[in-house]
Figure: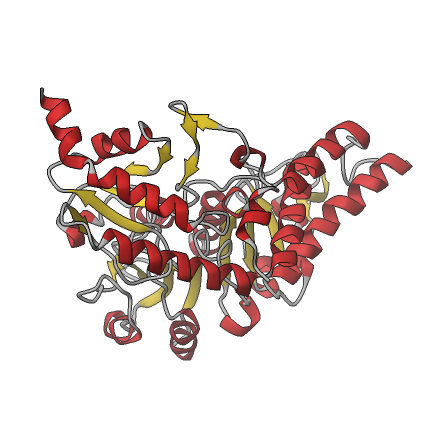
Length: 409
C-alpha cells in the first residue's frame, strides 16, 4: 500500500528542516524535487568509494565506474521503456536536451518558411531554442491554439498543421497550467504527415508512467532533479536512427573515434558522440538510484496519489473566496493568486508560515497572453506531500487580507 508517512521518512529535509522557525512544507517540487536518502547515499558512495573516471582507464576502478554509469543508462531506458539503452543521452538537464534537438537535429535540416509548432504554455527551454532556429534559418515558429480551459487538443493541433510543418514541440504536462497533452494521438497524426514530435517531459516523467515506445515520440527531454535525482543531470531520449543523424553541439574527448591534424574527425556512434568530456558521473549514478527508488514505489501509485492529493487541494482552495484559481482541472501544478496580493508578496506570506511555493512567471513568459495575468503563485505537489500540508496552505491563504493590512500599515 502507498504510505506517504513512511515515504516521508526517506527524505532528510522532511525530518527536521525548518523555514521561518516552522517545519518546512515544501510545495515547489515542480522547480526541483527533494532527494531521498537512497539517492544521497548513491552519490556519496561514488564520491567516497570508487571515484574514478569512466570510459578512460584499463584498471579495475575505472571498470567499476563504467558498470555503474552505464548501468544507470540502462535503468533509465527501462524506466521509460526505450527499446535500446543507446537511445539514452546524458545531458545537463531538459534545457540542454531540447537545445541538442534544436541545434543538432533540426537546424541542419529545416528550411526557410518551414514551420515549428509550439504553444504559448511552453517553458522557456522549449521556446527559446526554436526562436533562435527561426532567426538563424528563416523557419517560422507558430502556435497551436489552446482551448478555453488552456488545454492543447488534437483538433487544434490538426488545425495548426500546414504542408510546411516539420516539427511539433510540446510539453506532455505544462509547468504552470498542468494540463496533459494527448501526446500519443498527436504523434500518430504528425507521423502520417512526416512531422517529427519533440516532447518536453520535465513535468511528466517524474509523476506518471511514460512509455516512449507506446507514445512513439521521436525525442523526449527530461531532468533528473525534478524526479528525486541530483541537479545538473538530464536525459535526451531519441529514436536511435534519429540520434545517429543528429550532430553534437559539444565536442571533445570521449566523443570521437579518431581525428588528425587536418581536422578530419570520426565521431563515435550515439550516445557517446554527444557526451564529450568527463560526464556528470555522480549525477548519472544518482539519477539511476532515483529511478530505482521511484520504480520501487511504482509510478502508477505515485500518479494516482498525486491526482487524489491535487483534487483535495483544489476542493479546499476553491472554498476560499479570496483566491483566483486558474487551472482547477489538470494533473500538474496549481496556479492561483490571492486577490489583491502581488504574487511575490503572496509567496512571502506563505514563507512566513513555513510554506515554500513558487511565484512569478515560472519561465512561461508568454502564457500571460492566454491567462491575462502576468504572474501567479504555483503549488506543485509530489508524492511526499500530505493532506495536512494542504490544510496548512489553505489556512495561510485565508490570511491574505490580514497580510495586506499589515503590508500597507
